[in-house]
Amino acid sequence: MSTLTTPVRAPGTTSGSTPVRRKSKAGWNLLGLLVFVTAGFPVYWMLNTAFKPAKDAIDPDPSVLPTGLTLSNFSRALDIADFWGPVGRSLIVSLAVVLIGMVVGLLAALAISRFAFRGRKIVIVGILAVQMVPLVAMIIPVFLLLNDLGQYDRLTGLIITYLTFILPFTVWTLRGFIVNIPKELEEAAMVDGCSRTSAFIRVVFPLLAPGMVATSVYGFIQAWNEYLYALMLLSQKNQTATVWLGNFTTKHGTEYAPMMAGSTMMAVPIVVLFLLVQRKMAAGLTAGAVKG
Amino acid sequence: MSADTTTPAKVPPPRQAPPPPPVAKKPPRDRASGGAGAPWLLLAPCLLILGLVLGYPLVRLVTLSFQKFGQSQLWGFQPAESVGFDNFTKVLGDSEFWAVVVRTIVFAAGCVIFTMVIGMLIALLLQRVSGWVKTLINIALVASWGMPIIVATTVFKWLFDADYGILNALLSKLPGVEMIGHNWFASGPQGLAVIMLLVVWGAVPFVVITLSAGLTQVPQELEEAARLDGAGAWGVFRYVTLPILKPIIVMLTTLSVIWDMGVFPQVFVMRNGHPEAEFQILTTYSYDRAFVVNDYAQGSAIALLTVLLLLGVVAVYMRQMLKIGEVE
Picture 1 (cartoon, each protein chain N blue to C red):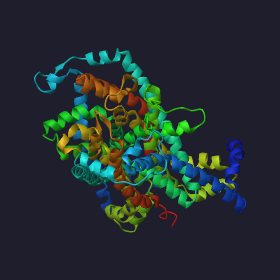
Picture 2 (picture 1 turned 180 degrees about the horizontal axis):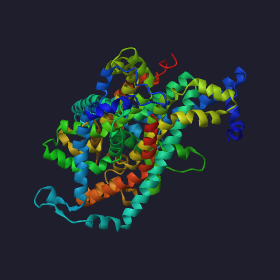
Picture 3 (picture 1 turned 90 degrees about the horizontal axis):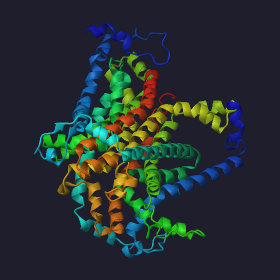
Picture 4 (picture 1 turned 120 degrees about the vertical axis):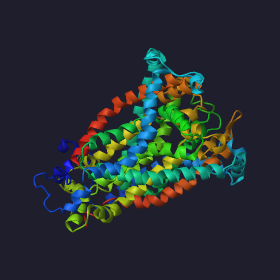
């Protein structure tokens, strides 16, 4: 098969003279820029609308380029409803979920990836299975449960609930990162006299750190962005940041420009955080450890 | 413990080469820390949390779907009575339900396929572009990933707005196209296509970033060796990259199926909290039954059927995952 298919696509990888390579690089870059523009446009348009005068936002012939710079949409967004309360609550919930989730998840991931024990398969199936439960399906019983526990309209209730959504994913992803770290590294450390625990702390943990960062960032974003449960489990006075955004849509329609300003305020910190850890993630997980 | 006799053989499960049993060198204290109890101890907190807040409600979901449970039961005026399979026969006998099922499957399949294919293409592209282009794409991807779904949904609503949306305005600039005032949400299929685009746009970054991390683990030597042996770009991808990435791809596909079958806020918010019949997918349909019609039992029955349907869809992947788990 390979001999049949290879000649067809060969031109793309001609490792010939440098001009050819540079030319193909330019082609890829052009394609890359197209991806950048397409993927980034919604975000750009959010920012564009947020900073343009509200009057220009409802121009029937909108200009793609910025038409002016104003912060009035932001002050309008802050006026509509309390902003910092919801943001604070979202932060508390998301951080608590990530911290607890990483500790609990890492332990569980270690168990299913580094130990052979009876029932391991059942646990793996179980963790995979609980991920398949659509969250919307659980809203009725979860509501009834939290109500019974006196946790309705409490942040702790929301934290426990989010934890169960994020744990299966955390365990599964960390497991993937752990099994990618060659067991031989650990075994070598153990041969050299490390105990199982110290082999993990000295050898596996440093290699796992980027993966853990990636997983926690993902968990944080998930918790921060969740909408339905935050809407249903907390009352209006305890609303979180995502629900706060709903304040812009009233019976009279949506105030798009202030809403885009509100969206910008919520999305920008997350995106900055993301960009910071992105580099760590890209560093690669075991790069260097095996190749030495 | 009786397990002690079996642990020496089990503790270091041989990875690739089973013949030489690498047991001999281990000091005994490692055996103790790797005993049969250790993994369960590590798992305990996780299982406890999942059991309480996921296991119990799941059981409650099942019992609910076999009861009559409306407003009066919710407020405790009347006890919930068991009604057997009544809820299910009602739901399954409803032709609207089957239309919703088909719509959900088509929608989710479209989302998953587009997400995975586009994600893979972008991940591969990222390896070939210059550093600055890579940075730009990463910024765009991270930005769209970081966007809360509800924000993204509203931004798309704004982009596709009939009168003031930028998309209609741009399309109308093309010769012979007059799209101003075109309502993308007038018909179900078109509206769901827009929502699909929104879902894919939000899901692709995670796929790209995960696959990119995976791609850095593909040994350069292997790719070079394959190239020296005469493999083209496709050959290297098909016979070197793809097999190494397979566990990640399977994981991503499984998760995508689960997530895309469970799409809710996108449809819910896009239709202002009241999706029309043509926009109903299983999740919104279940929500609608429970919280709009106030028939919590029927809502639960629909949710349960969704879970069962999903079990069928993902069972195939689960088997593959377990196979991979064994190899590892």
